[in-house]
Amino acid sequence: MEPERPNYGAIMVHLKKPYWVFLILLFTFVAVLTFQLSTKDILPFQFFGVTGSRKTSVTSGSDPVPDPGSCAGLLGEFPDRIHVMLIKEFGGVGDGKTSNTAAFWKAIVHMQRFSNKGGGQLNVPKGKWLTGSFNLTSNFTLFLEDGAVILGSQDPKEWPVVEPLPSYGRGRERLGGRHISLIHGDGLTNVVITGQNGTIDGQGGMWWDLWQNRRLTHTRGHLVELMNSHNILISNLTFQNSPFWTIHPIYCSNVVIKGMTILAPLNAPNTDGIDPDSSTNVCIEDCYIESGDDLVAVKSGWDQYGIRVARPSSNIIVRRISGTTPTCSGVGIGSEMSGGISNVIIEDMNIWNSAAGVRIKTDKGRGGYIANITIKNITMERVKIPIMFSRGANDHPDYGWDPKAIPKIKGIFISNIMSLNSTKAPILAGIKGGSFEGLCFKNVTLLGLAPTAAWHCEFVSGCTNAVFPLPCPQLQNNGSSACCI
Image (cartoon, rainbow, N blue to C red; front, side, top):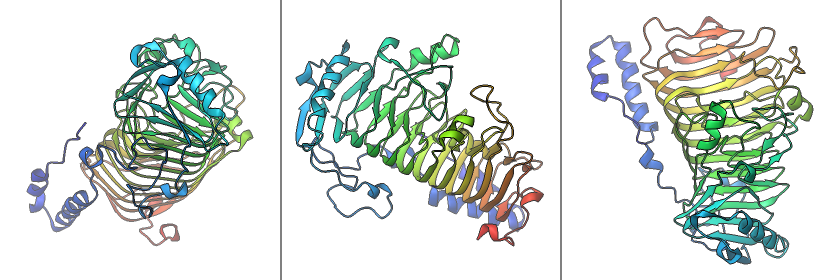
């Protein structure tokens, strides 16, 4: 979907206004031309030079030198997969009608024997491969060739119900267990899901209807969920129509998600794009996302369960993401953040036609902390609320949550933000009795607001430098405070 572009002709008309307005508009024009990305700048994704060979690299093309503008180098290059087979060899039929659940399970069981013998790779050729949920194995590559489409089964029984996540205590939507993801893994090492821009389609319409009609018995499954796993690469594919969150690495480390196209109808409920959860050393870059919820959301557990498990999300980089979500935010921190979230860099994003741009979500009962978050170089077009700190959703797993568990927020650095045709000024809603401090806003320009629009701030403190329109009094230190250094 190509976003509409700003009307630069209309902008130039206003150059007759006073000099300070001229400077702001000139800055707008230059900034947008500098930072703005379009869909065609990103698609198609061809970053890895993958050709169906046994070797998978996170560097670009055949150049062994890592891209200095990429965080994907934390994985380096995976070794050759010694054993490569086709799903057809296990009885797979790519007609879009025949169930391949047994074929995928048979293939994975077969590949497990090579885990310590050079690893295995399962190639999925052109065709439509209908399947229920299946698990991956260690030292393994799932490779979708050009034209390959994996389709999620429309039979809920082929998405078995599993135990809830320890840091959530129950299903996110319903009490009790939850449906397993379409592609799942637990306790794995060195796993790759990649290809020649093949597609994994969760066919989530059935699940969205169950949720909207209040007939859902257990929480919907994700498209891909990896748990307790290390060294994960997901790249160069299209994921679409997930029943619930699309990519959910939880309790993982060393995760790279790169060059992905993630699509869902804009009214599809809770179809988050990428949700790193209680995970460390995560790189998310060069992705295009359209969804009915947050494009990217960093999480770390829900209320007393997340506090007890105490698995934080940290050392996360999100960069060069473009997309739209009319109901939620381009990038979110929380609201499930009870295990703590720290050391996150979010940069070089382009967000349009969305409810919010940057959003930090907390609540009483969450506990935990959000600290040392850097958000910079973000362009927005027709985003209702460019910057938002929200609270009070009254969203708790059960009656065991502690109202005295107040989250602590410190060290949020937001800079180089350009928003065109905004509807509302930023809303920064802290929590009474909580600690929302060290907020820094620098080089933030929000255009299109009504003259009466004003920042709304409660229970927060910080400073600003070069912010338009004028921020709330709680932030009007204008660079004199050390919090912007």
